[in-house]
Image 1 (tube, rainbow, N blue to C red):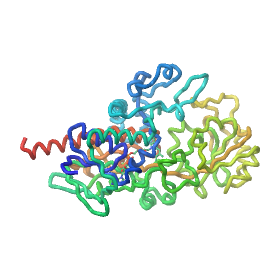
Image 2: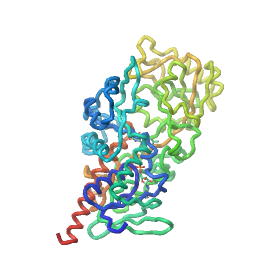
Image 3: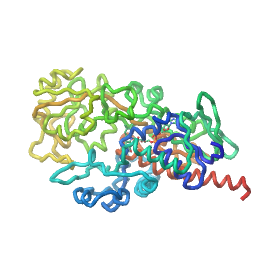
Image 4: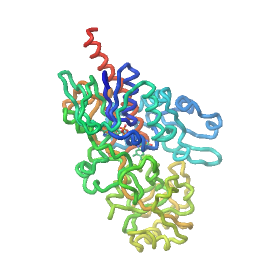
Length: 500
Ligand SMILES: Cc1cc2nc3c(=O)[nH]c(=O)nc-3n(C[C@H](O)[C@H](O)[C@H](O)COP(=O)(O)OP(=O)(O)OC[C@H]3O[C@@H](n4cnc5c(N)ncnc54)[C@H](O)[C@@H]3O)c2cc1C
């Protein structure tokens, strides 16, 4: 820990990208990780490892997935996901509030940043299982999300740490950062607790990458609103807003959607925090069925868009229902389209050969209300338009409220299936302001010397909804920038001190 130029707080994707970029730029780097080694890597380790990246052709994908075989390329319609589309998705889903300068950098550097991670040893694969549909012997990708890290989030974090080890980046586990040290020229180090002792690590630059505040029940109730203290946490228990608090204490600008967060439909009886070894508690196949509340009523358009663009708001919608729970309903017609998350043992599932038999088992649901909903919904389905899960097929149920805009099928083919879900929070959207170089900015808009940030604790990119896979991508793009710029400053100061 002696002779550190740059301290990185956190050891997830954003942090390790910053640490690796700083090291590549010649800085001596120390990483502080609050978690013990076996739980390192925060939400990144809990994640599916999917990265939203722009590409025009399969050749672009080959550059980041050089292992793709000719037969894979032949049997797959990867489509394209151009820069404009990525930028438009960020703008549209945030209701045009996303910071355009940050969004432009994220989009423009997404491809090159994955290529950089590839050079560092992270291997990428196509997400055939969750993001492609097979029809007539070919796979077709449908939602702009094509690439995942080998081994998912855990594989990504292990690969990043292996790269850090090769470069002699020191990682201190069980090291919880508590505050920033200020010097005459800016940030001069970090105070942290480790092994029951308070310690200080001096440095010329600090990169904060220690996540948002999703694991802090008190902040959730304070900023997200009533009952958010009750929700399940999908990921790391270590992200409590510490980095945000440390930066605000130094005058950083609070930025972004502080009352907004990413939250999904999640196993109703899941444990309170995520378990890295027990992935798959989210339930995202709702576009192919319907979702009912305690009154047995539908409460949102399950087919409004591809799930990658709607899933991040569903937890909030469920929390607002009576009792804060819902049931997802499917029949045999679509059971084969349910993702693997619906086939794990830790699941609250009921099945029946009749819809009445299913109604009897829906814990907490008004039976008559549910049967009425099914009857009205079945009557409203447009059976003339062909069903196609790979496109927005326009097969709607319009004469019901709310409408279902796509992928509507009558629910009449036994066996019938139902899954109980509640709100699971993934991460929070509000945080601190940065400029495109990853420098933390103060309320007046000027950078705080020596302070950089990346990842979940940065505000300004996501408002209301979120395009799946943008979290890891933005952490990597801005982590890399923040790390390189932190190193530049630290090395510059080192040279000044040496009188060079
Ligand atoms: C179940 C799940 C699935 C997801 N799937 C995807 C996906 O497929 N694609 C995608 O893009 N996004 C996904 N996400 C979101 C994604 O995980 C996050 O956007 C991203 O990982 C955030 O990275 P980060 O580096 O900012 O934070 P994290 O990865 O959470 O890292 C924060 C780090 O800071 C440490 N820390 C916290 N406080 C302190 C402190 N005081 N001192 C020192 N260290 C501290 C933590 O232990 C951790 O190491 C998923 C999230 C979850 C929970």
